[in-house]
Image (tube, rainbow over the protein chains, first blue to last red):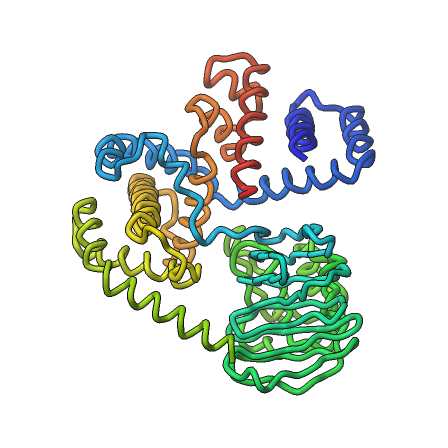
Length: 307
Length: 171
C-alpha cells in the first residue's frame, strides 16, 4: 500500500502541475485502472485533499504558522515540564482512544480479519478487535460495520455500548447510534443480548432487523435495503423525511448540513451515491421545492424555494 | 449475568484508581499548568479516558499510565490554545475577514487543529511549500518564486508533505 500511495502522490503532483496535459491525464487514468490498489491509494489522496479544502480560505496558513511559532517559543519550557524531548509533540498523538481499525468521515474500508472474516467499516467508524484462543470479540466503538464471518471454532461476537450480538454463522450489519444499537441480518442468524437485560436475548434471522438499548430490545422487523446498501456505496431512501435524509448524508461529509424546520417533514424516495453527497444535494433541488444555500463551504442549509 | 459482573468489577477498579491517584494526578498537572482549573479539568479527562478504554483493571503501573494520558492531554491543550489564539489574532488583524458565528468558528478551529496535527514532524521548508500550494492555492511556479527555489524542488516538497499527511492520517 505504501508504494501505491507514493505513486498516487506522484500522480497528484504531476496532475496539478501547470505543465500537465491530456496525455498526463490519460496516463494517470491508465495507472488508476491497472490495479485496484491504485484506485484505493488515489481515494486516500483525494480524501486528504478534501480535508485540506475545509480550511478557511486566505488566512489558514497565517493562523497555522503563527500558532506553530508561538508554540515553539513555549515548547522548550513545556518539554522540560513534561519530561519529554522536543520531538515529543508528535509522538503523544496515539491516545488510548485510538482504534485497531478506523475510518474518517466520508471514508469506507474493507478488511479481512486474522481469522478470514470480512469486516467492512462505514464512515467515521472505530473498531477494536480482540481475538484469543477461545473467542473472537469485535468492539464497535462508533459508526457502523458489516461482518461476514469465516468458519472458525471460536465464538464471534460484536460488542456495542448497549450490549452484544453473537454471530451464528452469518453476514450482518451493526450500527452504533446515540444510545441505541441497530442490527440487520443478511444471512443465517444472530443472537442479541442487551447489556443490562441479558435474559432478554432474542434471535434475529436473515431478512430481519432489530434495535436495542442497554435495557431493552425493540420488536423484530423486516430488514430494509438500507441496512447494508452503504457497503455498496449507496443510500437508499424509501419515503424518508427530508431531515432524516440530510442527517444520514451528513454522516458522510464534513461540516454542517441541515434544513429549515418548515420543510423538514417533506417526504422523498431515491437512491444516492455516498461518495457524491454534493450530487445528492443537487438532486434534491430537482425533486423537491427546495434550494441549497451554502453559508460557507462546510455549512450547507436546505431551504424552501421561493415561488 | 457474567457481563454485568465484569461491569461491576470494572467500576470497582476505576473507583479504586480514582480514590488512590486522583489528587496526586491533580498535583502533577498543577505543577505543569499555569492554573488549577485546567489541572482539575485535565485530571477529570484523564479518568474519563481510562473509563472509556476500560483498562482500569489491568494496570501494572497506574501512575505511569495516568501521566502518559495526562501528558498527551496537556500537549493537546497547548495546541488548541495556540491555534485558537492565532485564529483570533488573525481575525482581529484583518477587518476584511467577516467575523463568523460561534458555531462556524468552532468548526473552522477543528479543521485547523486537524491540519495542525497532521503537519507535526514535517520540516519547516516542506511545510511552508506544502501549505502555500495546498491551502493558498499557489501554482508551482509562484511557490518557487516565493521561496526562491526551483519548480522541481517545489514538486519534491509537495510530494513529501502529502505522503507525510497520508501516513499521519492512517493511524
